[in-house]
Image (tube, rainbow, N blue to C red):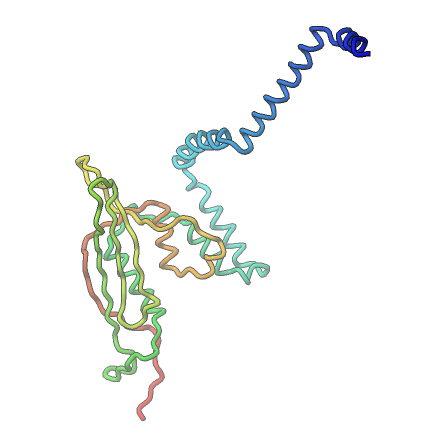
Length: 247
């Protein structure tokens, strides 16, 4: 019986048949290996990396300015539609965020002025003294601006610094703004740019004020930050008016 089975097998499988079977199995094994490499291995990462290297410079160089008026028009229409009134703040902030800053550079003292205007509008007046000398108004609040360079490792190529805007009354308005610049010795000194995180959740737009939206726009445009002063102080006068009381 054993010899008969062997003879049947030898008659059924010619050399060509064996070669085809082995060839087919080998082909399928290679296909599975390649598929797994693209799905789980380094091949997919390598391809994505190469595509990114090619596409990102192209996108960065492309001028999208011609689409901005259309984008602004569409977003304005959406903001004003009744169906989106519940998300009006998100849409308005998104529209403002997409507007390219006109200036290629901005002085830190100009940023300070913009922040002070925000403080005048939004400062919490609880606990502020009331001034009756010239009508009825809240007393002024001291504000301070400072720029502090952080220690840079001797081997590092990036100089980091922090801009601080603060007032003595409402801490919720105080802010620290990280900035950085390329500091390798190459002759011409590079300007500072904002170093805010660019990973922005759409839901967070509901809670962003105009000043933070401006900072995000300046970050996205890589606007140069000119340190014309590293320290300054000023007073602000709250726009809110107290109820007069002469009792």
